[in-house]
Length: 488
Image (cartoon, rainbow, N blue to C red; front, side, top):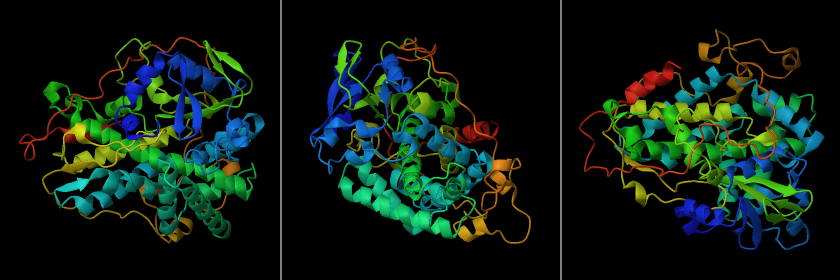
């Protein structure tokens, strides 16, 4: 699962693995073996029964006994860290609560405004050129700007963190990348101890869970890791679909679908984290006829489960039963914010540059190797050059402006939407990111329960269209998409 052949056509691999049962043996990296779950209901079984499938990676026998070397490229993504992703039971409850309470303070209106302003700033850099790599110039940079703001992270530390996370996702010199992440987060935690502000780092520090510095560092690993690499892949994969599939790029009479529907399609067919959800059986298990040994990694293929042939319908529009955000006690706590960021990023780009075209045929786009993600190497496009957006409030990069606002009224997009709770009122920094209380997850269904109605079988990802020699003569209705999005 680490070579270019798998990256080029992972769904062909999933189809072969399904012939072996609901789960099958794979090699994630040289010498790192695991069992990959490809069945939708079996995936839910793993994700929703922590008493059988634990997350604490200290159970990983092959790493403990030396069969997997500490410098193996998948170790930084799979080895134990004292954060909510790799913990079970009471430890998980405590660490997860700190995350959900802090995320609940983010005002989606303020977040939307920041994403829009950041997007305009990035688009202005290439709008007049008539061509761009939307991955490197847009999808990769926008999440960086957002997480720097949300975490109160200086740009120089943010650059190092993105370099580190790219390294561990790609499995390229992963040990050095992991060390770079750790050293950068040590600096960030030390900075926020000295200068707390209205940011996720400061809120985590002030939370009644009383996280240690080590726990803070590793909570940031999961939060920033999920907020950069997967976020850029969601944005880029959605743009690829919109620019290569006639259902989305056609005119209104032909049934063009809005950005939210494109995101649903991507989350079903090309989720940004295609394979992850690593679990470790607490004892030997007979799993639908597949023997699973205690302490050996079981990896959930979100992409394979989403395209399980047992899912009977083709309706994906508005269908959120996919597993792209995982499920069970470890489902993604920031999925609403992640989806908002991606939707605003895509809508803003298409509103500003409505005649975007892929600069190469869609089948020539190259996917980055790696067992966990679904990520492009580049997304080259062309378009008629466009002028800058015009005067507007610039994205805030001065962290002191966030911590210590100057005199005068707070702009509407930065005003809190609700008063902080008593628990929040004593936290350091101002409260301009505050929002409504966090939602709680509903009860898990029974083991191997039938899949929800409205699920979908596998289908071709796109109906590709060849880019012409120049921009399309007819303006596509991206402005309609913008109006639709703003009306939601």
